[in-house]
Length: 229
Length: 122
Image (cartoon, one colour):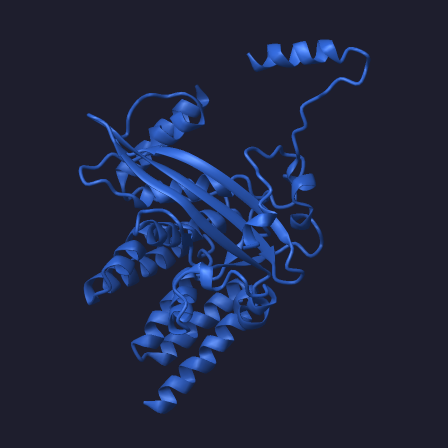
C-alpha cells in the first residue's frame, strides 16, 4: 500500500528529482557513537516514572543492565549506583536531570549517562488475554561534551498472556512473552529494553562494534528536547 | 518464517528455565534480572542470599564455559560482601572487575576508599 503511494508520489515528481523517503543510517543519525571519542562505559540513572504504575520504575531499572551490556557497553553496576544515589537522597532521575553530565565522568568515570523516562505503563485486561502498553524515552548523553549521543522513543504493546496473534514486530514480541498465572512483568520490561537497545550502535565489547554504521535506524525520534525542562 | 522459528526456539529456551543462554557478546546472565528484582522489591536475607547465589552461579558457569563474566557481576558481589563486612573478599572481587573491565577502575577505587573508611569507623 505504502509502495503504491510512493509510486504515485514518484510519478508526480517525475521531473527527475524523485522524493525518496529518507531512512537514516545509524552512523549519520548518531555520529558521536562512531567517533574516536565514542563511549565505552555507561551509567544508567534511575528511571523517571511518569506513568501511573508505581512498579514500572523498579521493573525497568532492574532489567536495563543486561540488554545494554549485551550490546557491548560497560554498564556501571545499576544496583550499586542506585544505592549510592539513594544515600544522597536521589531516588529518581528527575533529581539528576538538570545536572551537568560531566559530573558522572568525575565521580563515576563514565563516558556516557543514560536517562530513561517512562511515559506510559498501562495494563489492559481483555476476556482471556492481557497486555501492557509501555511508553519509554531513552536519552544517552556524553559526559565529555554534554551532547546527546543517542536517543530512542518507543511505545510498545506487550502481550502478557503469550497469545498467538503473530505477525510483525509486535507478533514476535508476543511469541516470546512468558505466560504465567500471576503475570511476571520482569521479562516484559526486559523485552522493552531489548527492543530499544537494538537501535543503539554496538559498543566495544560486542563483536560487531563499529560495523553497524550503515544499518538503518528504525523508529527514532530526536529527543534533544527531552532533557530541556 | 525464520522469525517465527527463532521465536519458538526463544520461548522454548525461556520455558526450559535453566537452559544456559549465551548472548552475542558472549555473556551468560542466568536469572540475574529476576533475582535482582525480587531483592529490590523485598529486601530480606533470603532474597539477598538468592541474588548472591545467582551472581556466584553466573561467575562459575561463565568460567566453566570459558566466557568472560558480564560487566558488573564481580563488582556487585564485591559490594554486597563489603556491606557484610568482608572487606578482603570485596577487594578481590573489585580487582577482578577492574582487570576484566578497566573502565570500572575509577568507580571501584572510589568504592574501595569508602569501604576502608567504613571499616575504620567500626
